[in-house]
Image 1 (cartoon, rainbow, N blue to C red):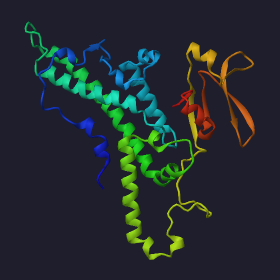
Image 2: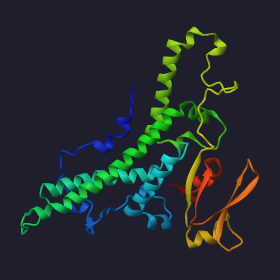
Image 3: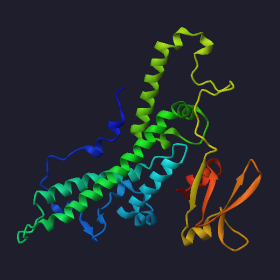
Image 4: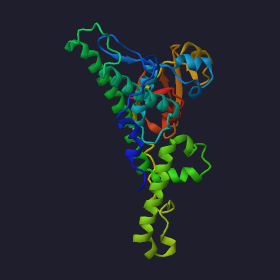
Length: 292
């Protein structure tokens, strides 16, 4: 197969062996409060929606929190969720810039001539490297979880591509994931045809038959129980969100329906619940809840 998971994760493992002689101000400045090392970087306006509110809301710290939330949602949900293209581009860019920044510091390009050169001067650099490894681990784990679901639900995703479903496969997968999915499906289909299917009757050669007692297409386990936390919306969303209602105690909540019991359930803002995934699927897609 031409594309593997190593191709998807190559950007994270690429070592920078050549240091560009550029203005040090072009690299990411880094600050530390003794416990957490934070990366401060500028943003490319071309990669950010033009809405000013969104621009003000994009910071390295908030992006890291978003990625943590997406990572938990992806690992806890039975289905493959939408790929955050813009967020991942920003995170990968910051990782690469931070690698270059650490190399410049380790080579002494930013070192003060009056510095003593003691071992204590290396502590901030070690903290920076540790924080960088945390981010790289998070990205790797997130992508590997998605690759596992792409392999597991390959036929189901292929059906979505040709169905009238509102979910587009191009929106669900990244460009690299889409290439991997198509080539993996083609390779597996060729293997089945050459080894088994061509020796069977024509009416038995389908690999996506769903009419029998047992479906040949593995779908996500929609009835899986998940733990969820109802996110606290902003003050503006509290007033404008049409899905928000007030319960008998005056607290904001979302109303979901359990079809099996034909019963409405209140999900109070800030609360933690255990529900079947199919019940809260739309709320998760809209960012109203997060899985834990």
